[in-house]
Length: 538
Image 1: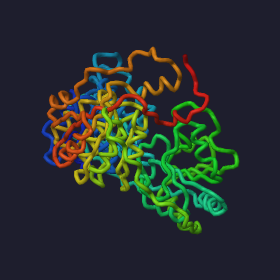
Image 2 (image 1 turned 120 degrees about the horizontal axis):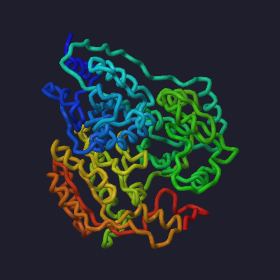
Image 3 (image 1 turned 90 degrees about the vertical axis):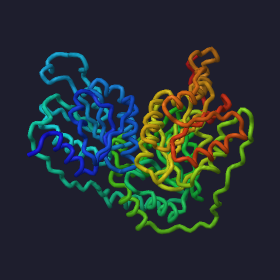
Image 4 (image 1 turned 30 degrees about the vertical axis):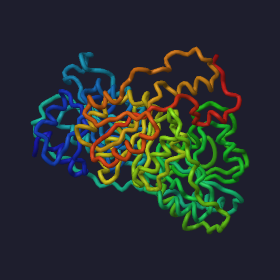
């Protein structure tokens, strides 16, 4: 027999977890006191940052991240990170303390109906009645969190005496690779072999199931065009590959127009389809056959067209690749460098990313949150290794900065770069403090235009007219903020100063922030510039 604290740490060791992301509260103090020397606590100043760092760490490690929120009410501050984990399929075991169990019958200070609020975004809520039940709840939560599709679980910590005796719970060995139905996969093989022109759409679940190389092999065997899912949260196909044709647009008519010339579409690891701007049309032309390979029953149930096959994506792609006949086509063109961007003043985001692409390490990892200029990033930055790109899947701002810190903590062998807008940065700016305190050498590349450019673009798309307040965000000095949190930081205003600043930052082994002043306006993305009959809310 051991006490409750010892049982939890013993169980976490057995599950290969030794990092705790925390903003601890009263219920967690008993847990974190005298933390064993083989464990590490990563402190965040806001629960959104705590959860976001854990999401990045879990994704990069391929194992569950462990989160200790301040209390059950403060966990509400981290709800956006929990939603991110849900949509990113990031496994998290989240603990949050509640008021003394003797107050369960009434609402007291620091109590709320948090379990009900979390349920749509966690795989399960564990609410043990006593502290002796907490270790088993954490083990059960871990086993569920890492089952595909992965995701967060919540364990509510009751107050009590953590020195009470209890048993170390057993750690079951669960094999979670669910093979898809071979008969269903045979229909995909037959459709691909009888197709006159087919295409593949790749999505984030390819990396979740470790299928990057298998998908590349299948695309090359079929010699088909490869598109990326709309609003991709990960890059899952080499950007310089001769078969890669870019991203699908996140609006219905533009997307269906992109795929109009294909008679067979194989969607691997992505929804069918993810839209943002409302541009009505057909999902896909009626004569086109659509097949979806997914590890998510939810994505299969919500598919707007075709046949969905649920199971492990790597196993499914390997089966198809082994069975389908190879197609030879020597007419494929090779990848070519994009045109150079002019060094204007003020700088354009396109110029910033074109310079960045020449200086950044080839194995860099990008955690991106530049909504108004993501199209320029896509056109000028090319990464060809697995695990190289992450973006927001939920649409909630504040994703990238804490994610970048978590990624860097997990991947000290690769440099993490966080391009972020000056508006987006304010949603999780406290991540700079954690980066400085734990010396995680993230380079935060902040593009400053002094406005919510993405929102301004949406205003123009919906024809609301110019008289819309709340789009300007003047007076923010990101360099001073970064200095206050302990980072090295620099402002870059002239194009000739950009390359030297980037080179110095990448040469450093410490976290950096570079504030780059860029032009306002003119940034169109997410398919809005190709829309027809846009809605008008005027």
